[in-house]
Amino acid sequence: MEYVYGALLLHSAGQAIDEATLKKVITASGTSVDEAKIKALVASLDGVNIDEAVEKAAAVAVAAPTAAAPAAGDKAAPAAEDTSAEDNAKAEEDAAAGLGALFG
Image (cartoon, rainbow, N blue to C red):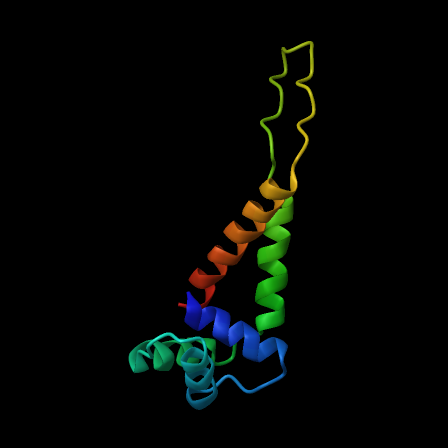
């Protein structure tokens, strides 16, 4: 995951996502560098519009229902559930984890 996060960090800073810059980010984080993972990630990101991929992932996370809809025959609607900051953080974390699948 740290490789994907490193690529996202470079992208948000407006830096090129190549093997050398990604290696610097991973090294600076104190993580040992796996050259094969770096090469695979850089190759898989070639031609990918990262902004669009992140936007789509965020839209999917927002569109996901938080509670089951009542059955058609139910007369009483279930009480609305309050979402806490912890639930929102967990949802954002899950969405970010899904980004790893986009980048290999």
